Length: 259
Image 1 (tube, rainbow, N blue to C red):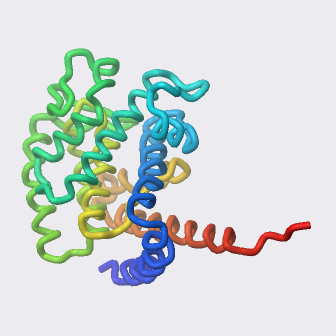
Image 2: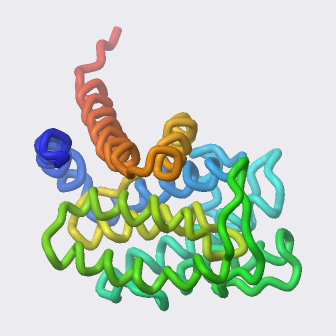
Image 3: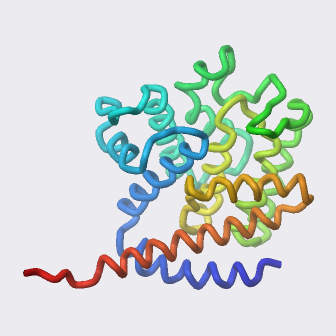
């Protein structure tokens, strides 16, 4: 299953690795991707930072708050940088609950008190959760499933399943467990990217303009009883992003006419 998507993805990934990632150098490529990933992942949850705003904050820190952006948004973005940096510098860590909780802790440490008084960053929720028009199940029962999800995901990776399939499948089921008081979407996207990076695959940035399709694919897990739509969405999004960067590089490599 997904042989067609895997074949298309691997062909584009090979070209992308040779012409974009390798040519750019690992450090610059990671910095470029961190800004894109952070801007779009936070924007999906309502943060108004643009990619340019995110770059300015990353380069100049909290001393330079972009015009029109709130301190809360700046703090949220700064925490996302911390969680992202932790993730990419600890790719050797086990894919387990301890790692999941630490990423969420870093992600929500300085903003959680504004959204959920009394909640502790990195601790599981003590209340049933809802997001958008979705009401999740009994939080204690859902949280009890987290260890098995983490362990089964690690087994899937050890068994040689394609990292994109594993990342999408984990993400879909994790989001319906919704175990934290805040930051579940951002945490889920970070750990899906962790799965890909640990397998030496490019990051997957789900862009704000793809939010509706992304949410629809997540909802199909419950409405249709399958994660096929989300897995295909992950593949298609990755292919579209890589092809877009390759096309941009080609356009910008053309000679400029001078007068």
